[in-house]
Length: 417
Image 1: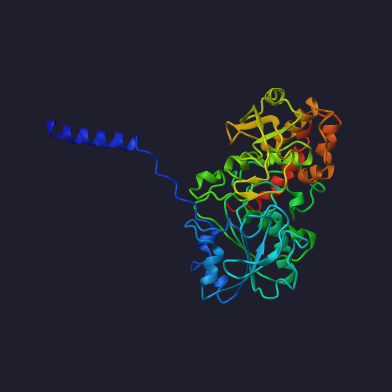
Image 2: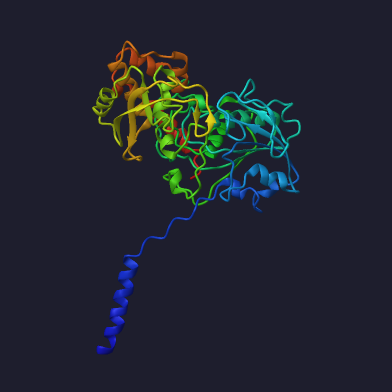
């Protein structure tokens, strides 16, 4: 038996080392743009004239921009660039003009000015359309509306449409908020989405296109090039992909996490801290007491978030980019900062209702509603009307349940991951 003891010790050591070994790191997510030029998908664009809808987020993980990659290839012809809000290079914070891309000399057609949907004339020199933009996961973040306008044009003019899928920055599990439109109608546009939709751009495109059939509208010849190694539970920083701020005021993933809640303040005279290095993470005004507001918000005991007093002074330049003049520019604002303590428990759409309720409770005389903007952000006038009528936040969010259940059922049909 003595000669077996060394083997037994070796077995124990190996067993223990295996038991306590760190789990293997998950592989990096491979985005749709990386797969476009593989043998599997290259035939979709080979020899074709391409119209590319993109912006500064259309990067491959090695830092190359898809515009530059396609522009230098001999087997495809990139003819037209289509720019969303903030422009092709992501440095504009107002309506975007058409023009010429300084780097490639290609024509740039703005889809965030008077024209939001490509016309037949704009598509004259295009055989196939491609969309590659990083979204964040909120209904009112305008890139998905641009994606859908292009889908409509592709369907109407018979142009194949390729979506290069990318992660939902804030995870693709949480779904919440009121539904716009009539109950049960086809989900064929952003107006029928809840505030937080829990889908990737590719999944949204599949849904918008599929639901067009329910409205007896022509469908686009749609191809979604899916990601590899992606799980819908992943937040962007789980993907091992480099973060590129999707718009001038979307500085970090923390900004994206709270954005569905605090962007709603665009429908009021309260600052959402645009013009600072913490946009959407802070709210305030010259007439707010930050201590009182933070105490009121903390009294709600919202899951995964706490509030602390803060002061800030909005400026017209953020991170080197000139932005649309913010509220209270150059003035000292007092208010509250959102500190997310558990991002998977945090319910940003519900938090938006509680924030508005706190402001209305503490500052009924100073708070002003910009009704048109507020109703457009929520997708319905109901939330504003219910708050003004004195309903509690709990009563308001409870009324979303039935419509959300219907949306989840429709959404399930179009999920890829």
